[in-house]
Length: 188
Image (cartoon, rainbow, N blue to C red):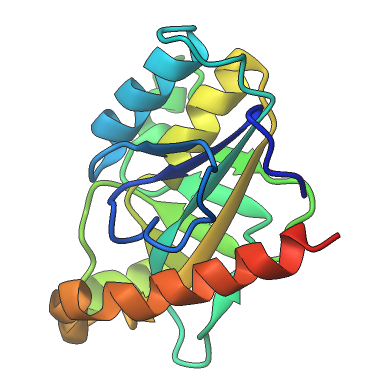
């Protein structure tokens, strides 16, 4: 992967993007789907002086929905878990709630505005996905709308349980892992 000015690295927080290589084009969106979609739409619509974006790489943290998941993941599928797509489709409204990510590792990332920190919600999501975050579906959706290839790279920071409330103290370790991933994929 090349990190030229046509590659846009997208993260929700500065903490998650802390170890992205210097000189890389980075967009910090804020937490949640609305903020992520708004910020990325502004860039892809051409607001600003930068060259056009040729690829989007969403990096950040994710909660593990299964105890055996840890480390870095490049999801193959991103699903939006907190939209009533079944009901809306039944009423005749076509809703896209899943995006395929080329070059993924086979994992599924459930994305939505709910911060998952309880075992009941975790179990429900675990039936459909491996990981959970709060922005990837918005990034995937906006990228698809603009016809820009998108890749998602997430590091497990917590178990999407009560320990997730310690996320602020866990994010630096996850960001360092993302930095090592960048080092491994950008070597010539």
